[in-house]
Length: 71
Image (cartoon, rainbow, N blue to C red):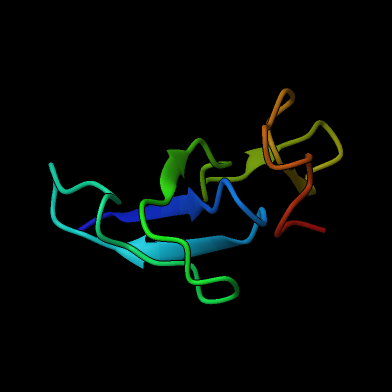
């Protein structure tokens, strides 16, 4: 089962959810404000890209802010 990232449109809190393929976030609720119906968002993949220096880095253009989870 893949892990999806969801965001609350009311307060902006993000959470990761382990779901079966084809499920949506229509019944998920926000842990902060209680809003029901979180939206699925794009997140940076977990596979690092190795730079010429040999150190891992997030791929350029990463929507998660670049370097998230990598040194």
